[in-house]
Amino acid sequence: MNKEIKGFTIKLIIFALIAFGIHCLVFHILFPQMLLFIPIWTIYLFNSLLVLTIFCYLNYKVAIKEKYRFSTYGDAMLII
Image (cartoon, rainbow, N blue to C red; front, top):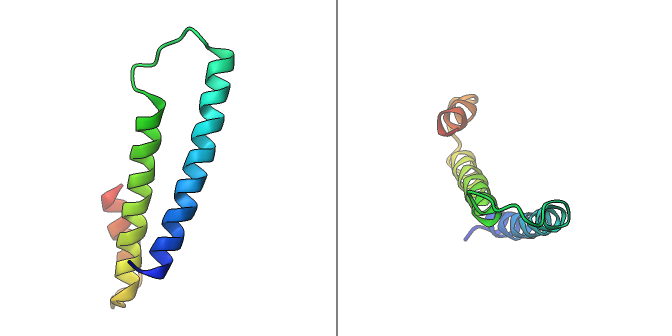
């Protein structure tokens, strides 16, 4: 695993866990009886995996030093 990807993954996991904890805490304080259709953890997991996938893809594109400067941006827009 690339050093940049490993560092980014650790930071992303820490950020997602902190955001998830705050979200759950606020949700359980303000809306204790409400049951969600989609659990909060699945939303954070999906978002984190999507961000990590896009980061790895863009890191790969930069590593192979593509000829066209804006093709990376265009590729990212196709993913999204």
